[in-house]
Length: 141
Image (cartoon, rainbow, N blue to C red; front, side, top):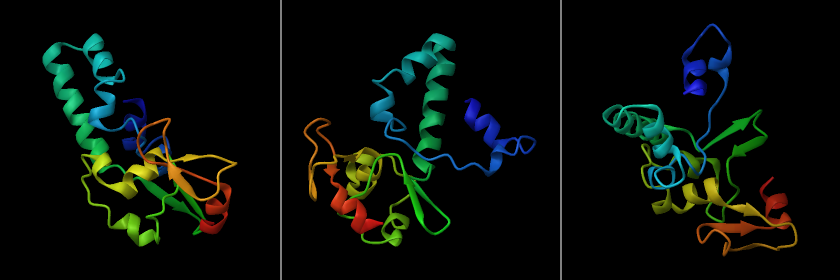
C-alpha cells in the first residue's frame, strides 16, 4: 500500500518510479503466501476480501518489464526462450490474471539464472518456468 500511495502522490517525485510485477503479485500465489492472511489480520473480513480483490486487479495490470535507456531490460525473473523481441512482451495481454497460462510472462517473473548452465532447462526447484545460463544471457544482451 505504501508504494502505491507514494506512486500516486505527485509531491514525492516517486510517481516517476516504475513498479514492476513480481511473481507474488498473482492471486494464486499471494493467496497462499501470506498476503491474504495479512489483510485479514489488519482489516475486517469484508474489507480484507475487498482489498485482496482490488490489489489483485491492480497486479493484473502491472507491467512485467521495463527498458531503461534502450539498453537495460528489467524483469523480476529472467529471460525466456520465447523472448524473441521486445514486441513479444508488448503482446502479452493485459490484464494478465493467470501468469502461469502465459509462458513468456511466466518466465519473465519466474525464470532463474544458473551460472554453470548452458542454454535453457526446466526449473525443478520451482516446478514452474525455466533456468537459463550465462551463454543465453550474453546472447540476449
